[in-house]
Structures are given as structure tokens and as C-alpha cells.
Image (cartoon, rainbow, N blue to C red; front, side):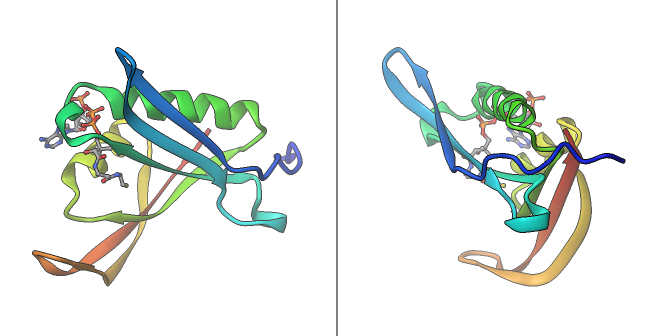
Amino acid sequence: MVSRGAPDPTLCVYVAVDDGVVVGTAQLHANRGGNGSHVANASFLVAGDAGGKGIARMLAAYVMEKARGQGYEYMQFNAVVQTNVRAVALWQSLGFAVVGTVPNAFRHPVLGLTALHIMYRRL
Ligand SMILES: CC(C)(COP(=O)(O)OP(=O)(O)OC[C@H]1O[C@@H](n2cnc3c(N)ncnc32)[C@H](O)[C@@H]1OP(=O)(O)O)[C@@H](O)C(=O)NCCC(=O)NCCS
């Protein structure tokens, strides 16, 4: 496959606004520098009282489109907590696959040692 070249590695931050209130945020950046910079990384946070309304789904679709526009070819999440079933289901429904699971990599404050998923998709 021919690479499209290195995207701009600048960190981008996006917010979702509902009636003048920020209800969610996302950041987009290169997962690694140098020869890994064609893979994007992103993270998402939605306000607790705004959950379950599709804000993360909308933000993720927007961020993936931005990532494509910036020249990224893949997107990778390095640390999706296995017990974060909402996030895992969302990312899977958006085409991300669990490509690896690191046992006991996260000290969950309630559940104790928990695995982290690495999730990945082509853009
Ligand atoms: C994970 C998070 C971003 C989801 O945000 P959200 O705006 O509530 O998510 P959405 O409303 O867009 O829901 C998206 C999907 O989540 C899943 N989902 C939502 N509520 C769920 C629940 N109670 N149980 C299981 N899955 C659920 C569904 O797959 C849903 O898809 P749908 O559109 O088919 O219903 C949000 O809970 C959050 O900010 N959590 C803390 C930070 C975090 O975990 N970030 C992700 C780290 S990988």
C-alpha cells in the first residue's frame, strides 16, 4: 500500500456544544511520531448528565472525518478499559476491532486489576 505521507502531528481538540454548554470533548493527535505518524490516536469524554444521547458517537464520527482530512490512515486506541462496556460497544459499532488485550494493565478503583484493550481500525 502506498502511504499518503506524514500528517500534521498537531494536537487538535474538539468540543460538542448543546445550547451553549460544552457537553463533550475529543482530542486527536498522532499515535506515534516519525514512521508511526500515519496512525491517529483520539480520546473522548462526555459530561455525565449528557450521556446516552449519542454525543460520543457523533463526536467520534466527526473526529474520524477530521483525521482522514488530516491524512491519517488508521486510528488506534491504546488503552480502552475492558470493563468500560459502553466505550467498547461504541468503538466496535464504529468499526474498531480489539487487536490486543493487556492483562491487569489498569488498576480500576472499584474492580481492581483490569485489562486494557488496544482497538484499531482503518480510516
Ligand atoms: C464512553 C463515553 C464517551 C460514551 O459517551 P456517550 O455520549 O454516553 O455515548 P453515546 O450516547 O454516543 O452512546 C454510544 C454507544 O455507547 C453504547 N452504550 C451507551 N450506553 C450504554 C450502556 N448503558 N451500556 C452499554 N453500552 C452503552 C452503545 O453502543 C451506544 O450506541 P447506540 O447509539 O447504539 O446506543 C462516555 O460514557 C464517557 O465520557 N465516559 C468516560 C470517559 C471514557 O470512558 N472515554 C472513552 C475512553 S476509551
